[in-house]
Image (tube, rainbow, N blue to C red; front, side, top):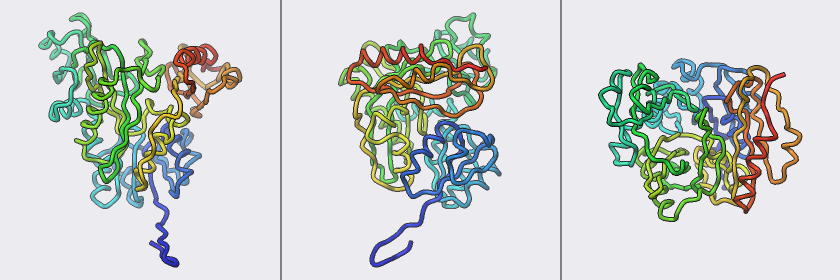
Length: 385
């Protein structure tokens, strides 16, 4: 601390981010508003976040030595992906480096088996499941079919998930520790973002309604606010708070849920970080998810989560059949749309289904949001020369 004429000046905090993809990039864009010195650890020196941080370190976020060396001189550290070396974060935490969220949370969430057991332990509603060591174990649980087989570790963005609808599909299951989860009769897929600070104070964003690409199993569109009954929204919020509070850790969390026709709510998965389901908050809300995480890490008051105006967020995905240097066909036309905010992530290489950017559209009319979202998909194609 520095004292001057009765005023206390806190030194600029040094905060690191493990991972330099689009989430890291958007975190750094929000960091420009705060007194913080930023550090990135990422294997790719050309990653989207590399040119926006104060200090870039090339290294493997899954390697103990790389993560420990990166974090030991920092005040705090956070993640943009769960697949990081938790053991190094545990050691850093023991030595006084703040980790958002706590390493214990990451250890639970990065493993889908531990995550499901966490829900069961804390009586959080989640679809019925068993743990499987290999495909043969599915044969002993045919009563759960149709079901979803989720690999314990390493899955992301629709990868590591197989649908086992009948006994014939068992051959597509995983030969590794996994979760076999009974399919839930989904009417809507919802994401609820919750912020919690070191005092235990919480702030909830309005729940959003997600629409997934049925082939890629990736988020395609997302509407905010979600069209759900008031009682269902209360359930969503209460369940999300239960998930987060039982972690006993500050941070920003995205809880993905299923809702059926009767308004029953089940937790699907939790992300302990800024998330695809919160991108619309940059333009559509008073405090974006990225701004919120900086407030939490720097010890500032939680931000105002209300929506300024309803929105739809559209993911921009690499086109099928193209892999190589990215070309954005129709970008000029896309930029002519009114009330549309275009974010290109800066990834030099495209491939089918890769998240290359997103567009947020604002309107008080739901039909206008639906129309404009479809128009975005028609106008822009991400391909190669």
